[in-house]
Image (tube, rainbow, N blue to C red; front, side, top):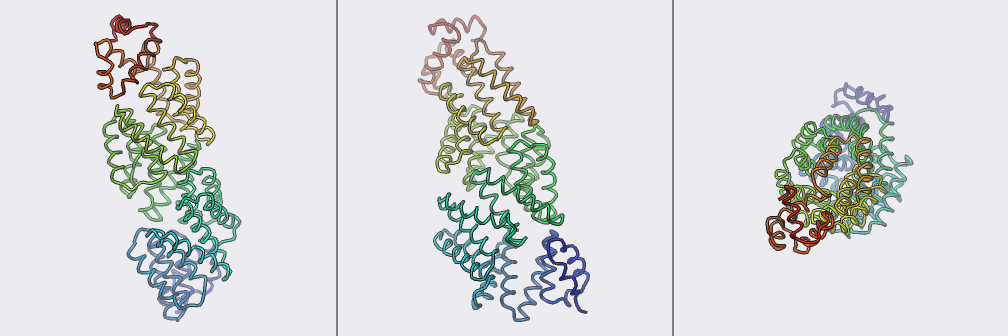
Length: 539
């Protein structure tokens, strides 16, 4: 029985549902190779991944039988790419070998350009950067000579990511910019456009280049709106959209979009939905919806996405600081974390370690974070490092250093337009200002913090403000919690060395605390400070 030849006329952005309906109703054995190809593509665009793979295997066999090595090679490459994308590496390797065999003796063609992309990725993964770069340039040459803008754009983006990985960030970003201009101008096919959006946005996000990430993701979301509903790219692009909206403070929109991303990716491929649940958990944690945040983090873990650092920060918010610290230490020790991912883990470790009184771990995590920030040179990571160092300085009682670091971080967050991060830093800055006796500035910062958390709907942030105010009201003469600890030990007759050993700080830091305590209490000696403590029931 012949296939439905009219279905081929429907191929394209708006025709995939009709192509699928018509061709799926026909006995597959009767379809020609190009009809099987159209059906495989249509099934993929409708997120029917397993069905698409099965039909594409048939298309490959049909092209082999017809003696069309180029198209057989293309479908072998597509199968390798799709199997690799869903984590079936052995199948991906086998199909890539078939693609090489089909295309090895062919005259130069666009299919060889696609194959060069995969070979370059393998070379890069094995550490052969020069070979990967050579293949990327070779791929671009093929694309130019064969008149394939798809191959050229993929080659430019590949070269850009390779150069960024080698530390040539400016040159690499220039290549990415060039490739994405073609994508956003509609100069490449829909499939390649989607792939390049999915590759470029994470690269810019990993570089903490939020302006590029936002611009490209906004373009990707607008492009998705022109596609039929339910394509794989809807969920893939939406996850990054939610991440960026959370950072930018558009939490109501992000909440709705996070739910959609979870549904879309579960229907495409469950193993890839873990990231969407993690992002949903992070949003809910920040909003103070701890129960639903935990549900999302646990679901992310079930789907194969490590739930840290979000789950550890959630445990801290639940009052389980020691469990949070242990889980985060285990995560850092057991994973090969790099770049922004490692920076976020270390930033969380600083916060949790200081909360449970483990200053040594907090200091070590801060040093690691500062190293990453120096190597990256990005404003975002520098802000993370400055906030961490400021938090350690607050814990150590080094008020001057804390003020300088936290003001630097505050300025960076405001420049980046990241309101939640700015509010968290300003809350810590308010604490440092109070410790310095600057109550007016502390009040201004607290007012800004409260307003930001209210606009965001950050219930947990507002609870942090209330806890700080309650603690401040309970401390006499503007003493910080750390200064009160020192005062109590002085009243107990401890020497500076004893106090330093007990609080795990230096004797120099103890002396600084004492100078600040004398100033706040209006006394001039150790004995007078001890007497104040006994008189006010602080000993």
